[in-house]
Image 1 (cartoon, each protein chain N blue to C red):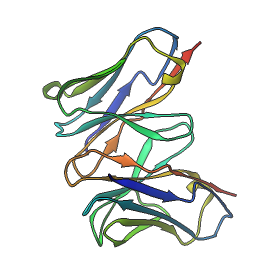
Image 2 (image 1 turned 135 degrees about the horizontal axis):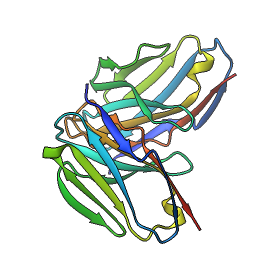
Image 3 (image 1 turned 90 degrees about the vertical axis):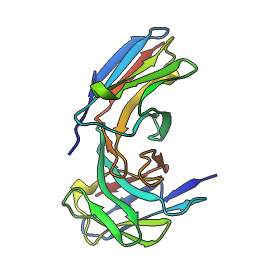
Length: 106
Length: 112
């Protein structure tokens, strides 16, 4: 089955810094999502981005489907950005990466 | 708009007891339904998914089973819980073949 790898596994940054999270996948995909899991465990949809670039405030994402990777950019980090970021791929069977744990220091 | 309900939010069960977690979706028809488990500090493991009533795909052989008695209802069960069944269980739905999943609030299960 398809493999999804995220990097880095952990990231600690000072408030105000920028960050780039990466998601690699082993096979071509038609669908890709980015999620943020908050400290209470809730999974929040950030982007549905099978290809191209999207932006939402301080967050943006780019998927290069032909090269099998996606990037999530967070600019001017805030402490509320802390948590775990997941990418997920699949049509009916949706597989998650292991996530990047982001900790923003005040 | 579509909503997903999952309950209970927390559950403490003794080893060997049965389990039943329920998930329902409102506002859509023929959704794909999913059960994931997250061990402490780790990623989401796909347990079961269903593309229709009576169609259940099991991804990980284990002590759990799933059923879909109605179009928008997905149930996760166990006859006898193990300590290793502890974790955070998440239900999700998506539209057929669109791969855009939306999650419930999750159930924190502790087996003691």
